[in-house]
Amino acid sequence: MKEKDFINIIKNTLNSKLIGDDCAHLKSLGIVVTQDSLVEGVHFSRKFASPFQLGWKAAMVNISDVCASGAAPCYLTIALSLPDDIDAVFVKEFYEGLKAACGDVQIAGGDITGSDRIYISVTAIGSDRGRKISSRKNARTGQKIVVSGLHGSSGAGLKLLFEGKKEPRKFIDAHLMPRAQVEFSKKIALSQKCDYAMMDTSDGLMDALSQIAEASGAVMEVDFEKIPFDKDLMQFENFEDIIFYGAEDYQLVATVDDAQDFTVIGTVKSSDVCGVKINYPDRCVFFTKEDVEKKLYKHFKEQS
Image 1 (spheres, one colour):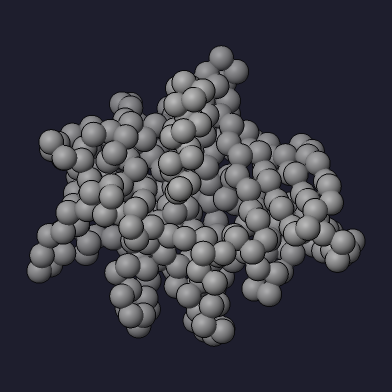
Image 2: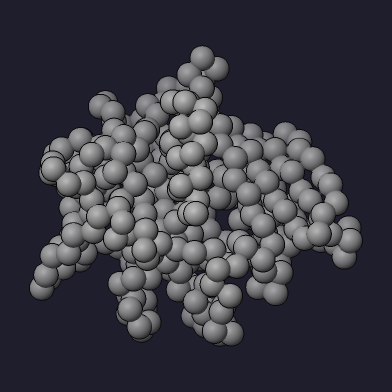
């Protein structure tokens, strides 16, 4: 079974309305909460990433989820499970990476245990104070689809690592040390008067578009030429797939009424069949949820 199938089973078993977005919005407490894990051999390899880079990425992927909700990132707790070959130098460098990534976000504690490999589990808490919180189900017909940053760079970096290459370094750095889009999130959450959808691209731009379309019962119509990406990606075979499915860029995708000063790549449309429509210069291609899931990003273990 796939990850999304397990999530649906859990959501239906618990009959919870809190499950389904990047964060759970606990309105009575004024916070959002998320948790994400990184497992050695599944999400990362020590032969590619330093302890500092692991700490950095562990913080950023969770801060990114808070940003996807529109909340202000405030606190992290870290559970770290380590095998016997890990020493004090590794732990110090790992937490230096966490600290560097966090900035004003405070590390409030956690847990540490032994294990057969490295397991990193981070809980992130954000504040909804003064912010309008997003949901994937909020996309509405006529809203503009806006994005932050460049898409596909991390996917290209992972491809280079698997091929044993060290250049272009900018792509490898994009994969090993992503940056959560804190300012983009803040600008969206403070500027939008109406409900909006927002999601990060942890599993790829196409996944984010598809999940918002599915949750909102809409079509996300995108003009490929408007998607921002590093033009050096064009040196890769099937670079368009890297842009859509490469994953782990941790950029944000949102559907908004007020798109002033944002990068617009498309429009939310109504249709009897929800999905993603990509307008290329010479053709149009429609992707259903099933089409997208066939090509979705697979983690480390499944690629190696």
